[in-house]
Image 1 (cartoon, rainbow, N blue to C red):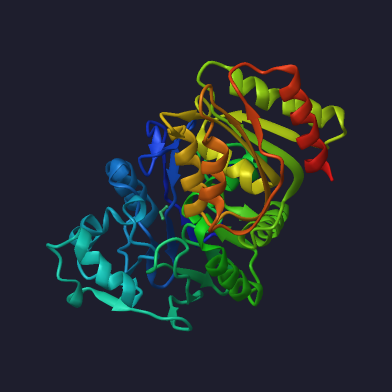
Image 2 (cartoon, rainbow, N blue to C red):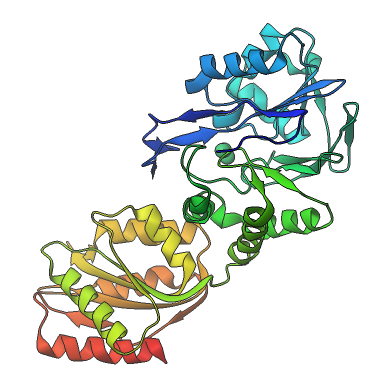
Length: 389
Ligand code: FEO
């Protein structure tokens, strides 16, 4: 895929095809890329480093990109180790390089690099500050909680490029097909930044005042043209917790297949009754982070769970906890429970949702006792009617 930005701005990031889980929890079927950029102007600026896992490759990319020149600045937009791991290598290899970061980043850097005296090498910048490189002027904008508190983004005025830190990132290696952007960008957004919709909205407002022709995220492809427009459109929806697509997502856990049968029956009933889109996931085997993505994508969520040792089935407890952490809201939610002697899952799921914001619970909670029976199917048909109202 094309990695051209401008004649002066080079891509020097790395693909990590061996990484199986991002942040120790998100499945990576294709790996992950850590983007980094080099601005070769009268002054030379490195825009973030990469994960230590790609140390040799990145240092080699940097050296080739520099082509004999020396960097003047290392701009650290985000301190998280997937981007800032190689600060020590840069500072030691290229003497005199000035590290540019926010005051909040300067406080965090010693947590990762206790051996470095940053007071001698760092220059802090704040919202509205500029850095003249020659032909290009860099403008810095605070972007707290997108996705850590110290984050800033950088606008290269003449090139019309926004370096967006984690914003507009996605899972996967750089060379994924461009058509795939929204799928893995959505899973990335809701699982990584989902909690911070208000802060993303604030960043989008700042971006709306800029003439942006290119977005360079720290993950995923360089966005231009139609893909850039689509990314901005989707970020407005996602950060406002709006429904992206009309549809119903059914997420279930099942121990012996019976709760799964109930979930699948409901899906079929909804389809027969004219539901535009019904998506189903077995949280016991499918990627739960895809489930989080689908829960946010559609306007209605149905959760189906067995009761387990008098409690909610642990995988369902975990899934609802993830929804809570990610600020799940503005959706319609319904429940199916199963229990052979004392069904509790419906009550427990409802209780977990009690302090969610803007959630409308759709009744009835359907109770299945063991195998799915005709009376249960009739109740699921009633629930389907309610969901489609
Ligand atoms: Fe890609 Fe928040 O690090």
